[in-house]
Length: 225
Image 1 (cartoon, helix red, strand yellow):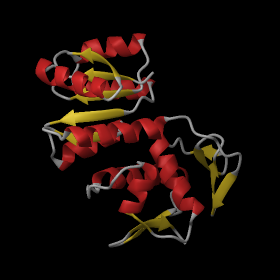
Image 2 (cartoon, one colour):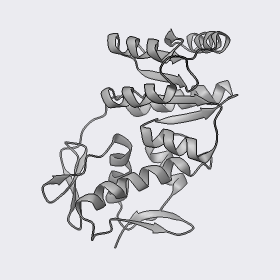
Image 3 (spheres, rainbow, N blue to C red):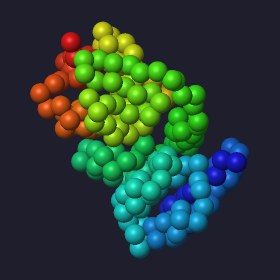
């Protein structure tokens, strides 16, 4: 059963989302405050969370942070804030996607479908891929430099796996988004840039003198030669 938690204090919007998702075969549970959302998350499992930011009690940002610390549930933030600083911060805190209000219902459904497909169990490859002194452990879904683990997130691992599988290929941001996030690229660089930056930071923390991911200006990214 696909069950979605809707965290939205506006009763009209919450009811509208419940009706929209029910019409498309999803089971929904509503929370009207951040505190209520965290209580529901401590007692139940959900396939996905739709999270508003402006909430009474715990804020949406606090819910995002506390949820990401404990769960891998995909989170789509629904926000009226569209400035670059806010969206970058949301991605850094662990949001899987965000959608600006007012949003198109069909786009919301498409983004939900993408996140649910990406989070579905996948067959694990029993192999390793290497590049320089970097080893991608496809059993553990992590990267190692020597014996030190990088501690990659799911998206960071998938980006690195894609580039290491084709080390000579230059991937455009469109290539990366469609391959890793599984949806249409809407031209917003924030998602790709933030995840590449965090991936680089984790690798450089282990091996500061080695560059692993190269920026090809005006095109995209590839593994460094």
